[in-house]
Image 1 (spheres, chains in turn blue, purple):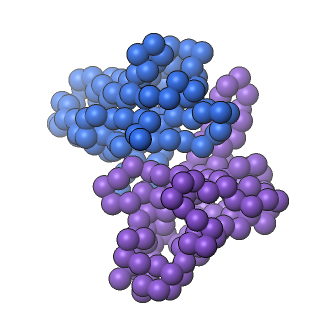
Image 2 (spheres, chains in turn yellow, blue):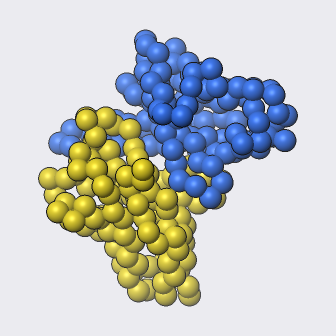
Length: 113
Length: 117
C-alpha cells in the first residue's frame, strides 16, 4: 500500500524554465509534508515543508502547494538551474501523531542547459 | 538544524557477517529513525530508536535482524545481522526536532552504502 505516490519517475526541464514535481497521498491523517533532494551517495537534503494548515509555502526559488481536498502537493522550482538535477522525494508525516516519514518513490529531475 | 555524523560511509561485507552503523548527532534529540533505501527504491523506515526504551520496528523488520541501540540522546547504532546480498542498500539515520508552530526539522545523515557479497 503506497501511501505517498510520485507518478513521474523522471522529468526533464530546460534551464531557466519552471520545474513542477507532483506528489499524491492517500492517508488523510497526514498533516505535514516535505520535499527532499537527493544526490547519489549522499543523504537526502531538506528543501521545503508545509503544514496541512497552509496551502502554500515559499522559500526562494522553491514553492510547495498543498491541495488537501485532492490530497495532492506539488513543488515548483523557478528558475530551474543545472544544480537542481537530482532525485526529488516527497514525504509525509503525522498519521496518528507519528513523526516518522513516509516517502514517495522519487522523481529524477534533469535540467538541460 | 541538527548535524548528523554517520559512519561508515560505505562497506563491502561478506554474507553471514554483521555490520554496525553509528549515528552521532550534535544536539540532544528525542527520536531517531533508521531508514533503508534499496537500489532504485524509495526510503523505507526500519525502526524508531527511542532513548531508554526498546526500538519500535515497522512491519517487515525485526529486532533479531536489525538490533538497535540508543544509549543516550545524541547517539544510536543499527546493526545489520547475518547479512545476505538482499541487504545491500543505503542505510540512513534521521532525527526530527520540533521547532514549534507545526514546524518540524527532519535531518538525515549522509548514509551508509552497504554491499554484501
